[in-house]
View 1: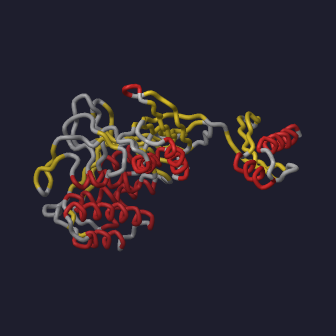
View 2 (view 1 turned 90 degrees about the horizontal axis):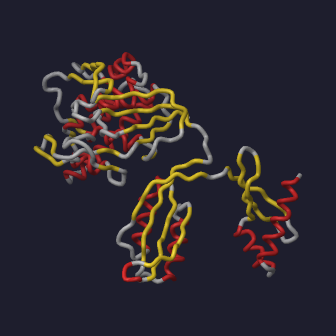
View 3 (view 1 turned 90 degrees about the vertical axis):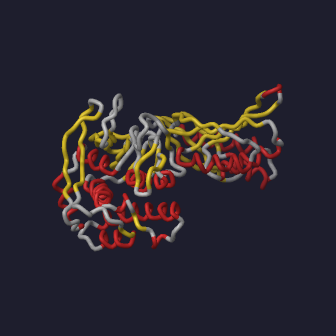
Length: 392
């Protein structure tokens, strides 16, 4: 699968996306010809090689005619895109991005979606940025997009409604439940257009996935900050299968004011909700109070949902999270026939060689109860039958 990683260490804006994709190999003439299908009269796309913080990058600017920055409704923009000669996937992605923007604008101004009139994001340059991004990802054959946590910036920004804090209201709503942080100069680093492209098209947020790198590109932001390369980096390549390595999220909470009886239920709930593993570790806390540390191993995409389960089901008022890498052996299931019944066996292997195996607990438990025999007898029988198969 061809994947694109958006490295937003200095934020993301629409023109930065276009610049990075061109820098990574997108044909500028193709981009320009595709945008011409929108019939945006008087709009001129310009590309130039530049530097940001001493790093070579590509800058894209959109020149619009005088008066071209009028407000536009979501319906008018969707109609413009729908009636164009663009590819169906490009139309779909562009409309999804604008609809996401429309929804946050409606919330920000407390108006129905159909009454939303875009300001900055509805201008001709933003239309070119959003549709251009959809064109670029499609033209490069990108099948999956992964995005880093978003650097939002800080300070204030001049907008149609006056001076607003960074992140702007639309951006703040767009990045809800998305990893984001603040670092660097007091400036708007992630714009509403850039945020909308990222949160709408990205399949996940986190570290770069395992890939065989084929191309990289740097899209220049409009400002050149001292001591910071104000660029968006894209890394493009083919995913590679590395089953023994994976990024995980560790979520922990120290608890000393909850009945231990509840802990078992919480563990079950977390596993039902997708936790990879849940452990309880006895600890001594302040004033030597006995308690326990509840540790959850999670897929990064599930971190927020599992955090919500912790807050809902336990007495904790705070959790801590950190990223970790885990290595796991390749796993598969085998079935063995025992004198007591059929049992699944989990097999772990590396380089085609057996490393570990274990009869499935639930199968052994079910058979032991049904036949009223010791659990260990079923476990040992399944292990014996599997070893006979492995030797053959």
